[in-house]
Image 1 (cartoon, rainbow, N blue to C red):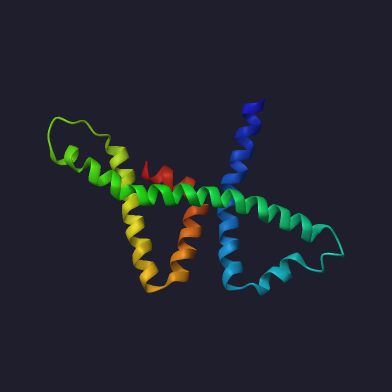
Image 2 (image 1 turned 180 degrees about the vertical axis):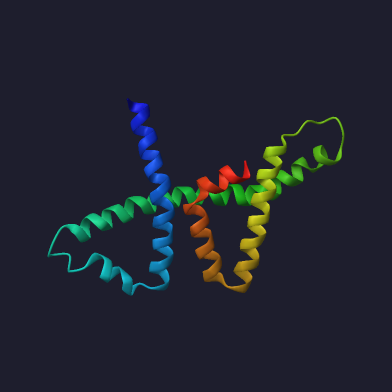
Length: 142
């Protein structure tokens, strides 16, 4: 029973987190849309407080996801340099899926760095969207 509840909540989170990350990016560029979504003042009903509580909880989940993404992106060059001798040399076994994962992370890191040079808000927005949909990225790379 506990396993089914956990699976259902994880599935719900896998849908809500990308939607929330899109909402964060939209709110960053268009903050006036928030008053249209919430509607009314905080004294009129409990709905604005409930939405703020939900936004805070989802913000925490997005922050944890962003930390995990940042770790793997920043660790990818270290991993690739450390594994370069195994890749070039002979006799050492290396997992191809793991190498593909870290090469993908490194390419994404390079893309974000190049985007940051061109436009910092675009790079941050892309990182937030990647952090929100990290579970799709991990499945695609691994």
